[in-house]
Image (tube, rainbow, N blue to C red; front, side):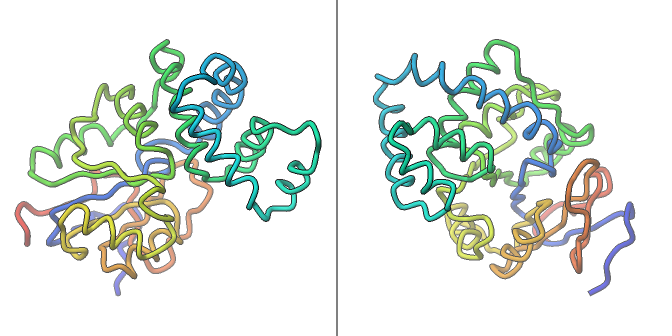
Length: 253
């Protein structure tokens, strides 16, 4: 396999579907780590107090408590054995450790919804992303999102972005309820859900383990190398630094 030099044009043949990660791929890692997560952590107690009687929130708290009961992480177990520990304490622990519990992601999405609505939050997409999404959509490609953030959080981010409301560019939304992002079976399931041949799907992510899993499932893969990304080693994957350099020929190839 010949790896293209950084910054050179990349051509991906035979693509009908694009599956895109968000953090470090279309949006800077710093927005999630320095704005979204701290906002959710700061607002969590107030949100739960105001919405504890909502059936959806109650169900998410019950799901969280059930996960806590079987969590083998030593910190989670120590917290569990504290007589005054509450579910909110476990949620804050998950946030601090960037754990991917689906119930937490959904609660964060509900909190972020309030922040976006109030104009406090706005997603700063990489400059080339909005035009690329619109170009691919007009080209007839099917666009999808696969992120550890909940589907609600994904739609909020693209609905309140630096490029405007871009939700209409996407036909499918997938989060970790579709499976872990480092498992090949997750990508096979997503391909089935989109009724697409895996080889016709281009997956782009900044996480090497995700790229490996997607390739094992038969997808075409590009490693996202963006400013501020903690991981920049693409190993044997072609890397994309700007979608202005990404060429996807018209038609199935």
